[in-house]
Length: 267
Image (cartoon, rainbow, N blue to C red; front, side, top):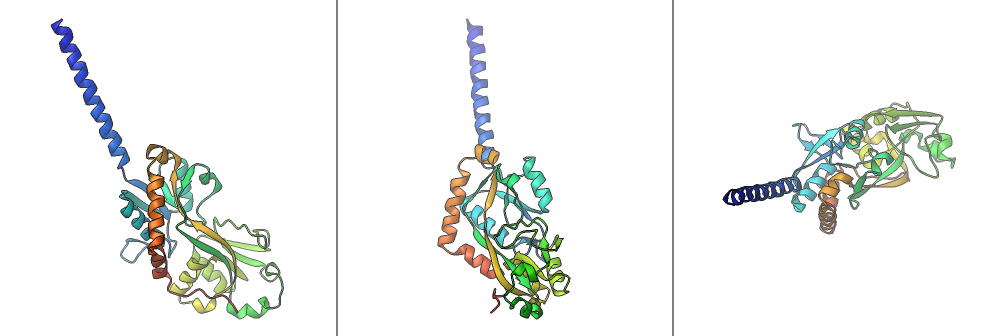
C-alpha cells in the first residue's frame, strides 16, 4: 500500500510538472516575436537608409502598431517572390502588404488588418509630351508603349495589361523613372507616391507629370491564418491600435514626413 501511495505521488508530481511546462510553452508562444516581411528596396515604403537601418512609411507604421499593442516582432526586407515562398511554406507570420506585393494565392490563406492607408495607381508621362495627351484622344491610343513594375496588378475599366502595344516590366521604381525620362516608353503606370518620390531622389521630378489617377489601393498588415489560430487576440489588438493611430493622425504624419514633393495633377 505504501509503495502504491509513493507511485501515485510521483505520478501526480509529474502531471503537475507537465502542466506547468505546457503553460510556460503556451505563454512563450503567445509572446513569441512575429516574423514579418516587407518589400525590399521600395522607397519610400520600405528600404535601408544610408546607415543600413530599416526605414520607410511601412516600417515606421509597423513599429508604432506593435509598440502600442505590446507585440514583439521582427521585420526583414525581401523580394516579392521570396515573400510569397516563405508565406506559402509557413516560414513567415505575416507581411506589410505594400502593393503590388500581394497575390490572390496569398489572400486566401491570410487575415488582413484594417486599412493602414491608401495609395493611388496613376498614369505618368514626360511633360514634353503633354500636348499629345491634350488632343482628347483615349489614353491607350497615345500611350502605346507603357512601363510597369513587375508584379503590378492592373484592374481598371480604362486600362488593362493588353491595352498597350509594348509593355516594359521592370523590378525597381528607379527603372520606371529611367524608362519615362529617357523616352523609352510613352507613359508609366505606377503608384504615385513611390514614383514621384523616386523621381525626386533622382533629381528628375521636372521630367515626370501625373496625368490621371487610375485606381486606389488599400495597404494593410497580413498575418498567416495559422498564426491567428494560435494567437486569436492578435486581430483585435492590431485593429484597435490602427484605429487609435488614425484618430491621433500618427499614420498621416508618418506619410507626410516622407512626401518630399507635393503630388500635382496636370492642368
